[in-house]
Amino acid sequence: MKQLLSSLLLPGGRQQQQRQQHLLLQSPHPPRPPGNRLPSATPKLWEKTKIRRCSFFSSGCSVVGNSSRRMGLTMKLQTKCFERSRGRQCVPKAQQHAEEFKGAGQHIIFKGEGEEEEEDDEEVDNAAHRSSRPTTRSLLCLSNGHGEDTIAASILMALLAVAEKSGILLKIHALPLVGEGHAYKQIQIPTVGPTKTMPSGGFIYMDIFQLLGDIKAGLLSLTVDQWGAIRQWADENPDGVFLAVGDVFPLVLAWLASKWQLQKTHQQGALSKARNPFYAFVGTAKSEFYIRGDDGSPLPSSWFSPELLFGRSVYYPWERFLMSDPLCRLVVPRDHLTTKILKEHLPPAAWPKVQDLGNPMMDDLKPVGSLRFLWQYKPARFIALLPGSRAPEVFANWEQIMQSVEDVSTAFFPERLVFLAPIVPSLEPGPFMHLICETNWQPHSLTLESYQPREPISAWAYDAGTSTRLETDIASITWPANSGTAVLGFKKSNAVVLLTRGGFSDVAHQAVAGIAMAGTATEQLVGLGRPVFTLPGSGSQFTAAFAEAQSRLLGQSVFLCVNCKDLVKKMCDVLYDTRRLCEIAQSGQKRMGSAGAAHRISEQLLASLLS
Image (tube, rainbow, N blue to C red; front, side, top):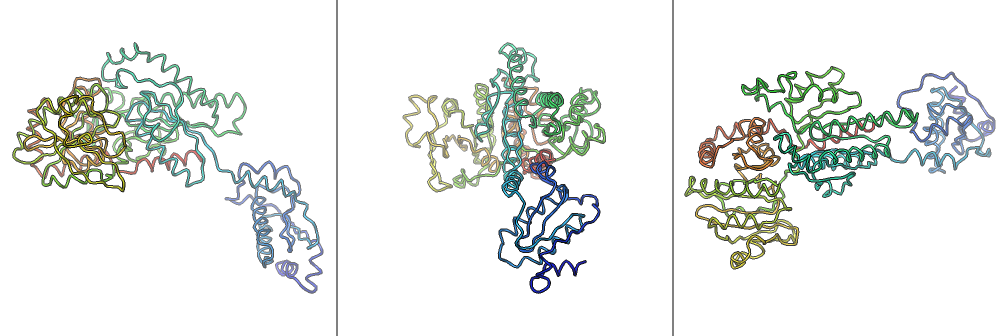
């Protein structure tokens, strides 16, 4: 049979005459070979066609039959390839593909050179165009908090990059459940639904009075409106998926929205046309380290905690129910220990979806070089000052931190200390400068270096020598209009305080320790292996309860201090103990994980989108 097929394909003599005759080769149809799947855009076209002819121009090979599910599209693409290479020696190729088609159980006809194609080229071209269109999916991200918004934004950025490389078109929207969602706006992710900043800033679980204050400010009506926006988005995107970042609140909304989508799909009878809805969950609020030590054993102070009473897991039964739902395709706890304990309390069918992919908090912490000028102060100890990011609480925290700075400077005298305070760009430096100058700190001239060509540089509110400006209106001083590096310097005795506009990653890598009254920034500094000394504040976020819970979460890396004198004593003991510093660095990195979590999460999320 192979010799006969070759004689028909080879030109010249008797073979050339025999090519004018039609030979029908038939064979039974075996099961469809794996991997020969048609794109979703083409099956209807090929199923409706009884006879399809795809010529190999001079060799004249055509497929006959309705077996497009097996080899139809492959044959069409081969035909296009041969047509583009017209004039080349393609007979051996035609013979090779004919034998492959025969082995797959296809009906093959060879025709002469003069026979015209009966294929509808325009229809095939349209089918090829539809099959080449990129896959499009829609995603709505739900997050509840400033830190959660930042984490979600980093995941979405990585997801867009991975999808672009894979040829997937993503339509992403976000709904910040708490706050205005500035992190999404910075990366140009459109938001849906109403947003509003509540008095508690999302920390209602710390104080019942904070919850009552939020309800009075319109929390219930805001939640109802946000749920309406989620349902509207689900109706407009029947095959859309949901990403919940934070705690149980966005998880519940993602579960309800997926159920809503599934119900609407069944009602419309379009389940076969649209992909099943699903949701993914990135848990940032809970960790087993709140109730367990580094070895996984329960802490003595947590024996009667609600988490251990409800099944010996930090996640309550109703939260585990939402994670084990079939519509939930991916669960990413914040650390290895939490992943391990959570799997033990979920049904075996849900184990594959729970994955230890790291903590996105540790991403995007690579220094950019904005503080290269600090070499001028070496040898010195660099200590980070982290007052938080929410006004007006941040200013009260700053006052407490400056009191501890005075005591630490005195205790370490005559050793030189440099305190680095990265201020979030949304806060102006005037109020911080006012508190510094009230305690007799003097302006400090700086010699800055640009770390990028044409980088705008500012020092001491544009001029290190204009001390008269301080005496007039300190509190009204603002950052420069440009978006470059801006640093304000103050000096007193053996210490220097530098206020920087942003630049947390550079500060975190330069510092050997931190004095903090913040949430996410404290965890990131611990993840880099630094000891952090905290003071409970009087605001709605960094309360005594929050600071105590944070110290359990971060273990021996965080030292919760009663007052400034207690802070000075603990800092002196720790910073002069090299062995203890090594243990703190290892513990912090173990509890917070390594960088790259956003990329790993995006890869798994994209795989779920395409499955």
